[in-house]
Image 1 (cartoon, helix red, strand yellow):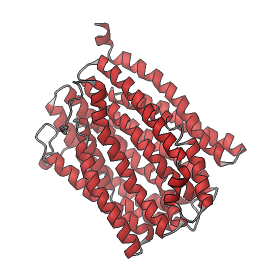
Image 2: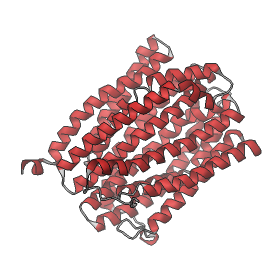
Image 3: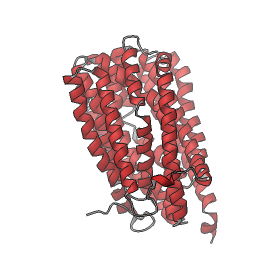
Image 4: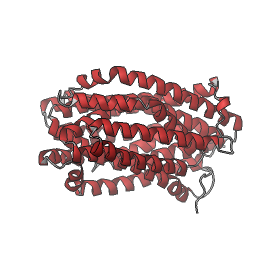
Length: 451
């Protein structure tokens, strides 16, 4: 039986990576299954307009949420560095700063979400028959922002200490509650998209409460003492130094997706419905690959704190190999079963299913390229350098997509050209990030490598 925590600076690397990553993959898949339940329930009981309404909110909620969640990366890296260097005081201060910071960010996010959601939905060209339902979904969702932030920050702390199983257990509980409430609110109380949003809100509250209780009950330096909650200046600056670029990168990514969603909206509500369903399915591939990014962040961070460059490089190459294998396998599986998978979400529109298959061709099938890019980014952040991958990713991914949309897509206005911007941007950005990784690696470990 596996123990909950791992010392990421010791033991065989490949078995350790697999042991650490599997619970994160299961967590991501379950989280996506529970989120997909929103679309499936709405699609089966409310129709394609409701599916489009929920789907239209995805890129916009990510625009708001991902900026603040980026700081949880900074929190995890700061805690992991302290654990690797065995500095209990640094870990204690990082934990308490992170938890209080998550509450502050959650409050800001609630206000911003309520004030701006309808305006942004209109800017995205959301059809008038879809917009009211989308706005209702978003306002209810943003009501739980504090709990979303708490869960993500505390889960990041727990994973930095080598425990990937506790967040999985808590998600299983809250996710099952979400599924049950989805069905009750939509089929019994006929609440449409408001029902699935409310179910999501309640499950977010539950997962946050469970993960905070787990942190309070810990017996190591990561233990949370509510009475000791305080913003420690040095830890705050370190969290911001790593987390702010990660948050900006996530936000700019989300902005590019908002603009792409606007282009998707231009093809009508049936196309939006298919794209939303395909995006939900693609998410399972991304979730599995993103687990290796989280592994690379925390493995590299702890071993950077322990000053072990050989282990850092070994972790890096093994994570790249694993994410490529998983991405190729899942991408092929999703693409080959595309029409059948889409039919689970959409019952009343063959045209919507066809539009979803187009997205899968250009996103799900080559998604391993995105996974490679994410692992390299995670490794660079794990070494404490968050600004370079932000700059490269913003220019390489977002910049290329924006140029593509306003040049190539404008000349050839069709879905195939629109979605082709994804793999093109992943390839160029991945190559640039690989060069940056080795430069930062040599700079970071120059003393150890020259010894």
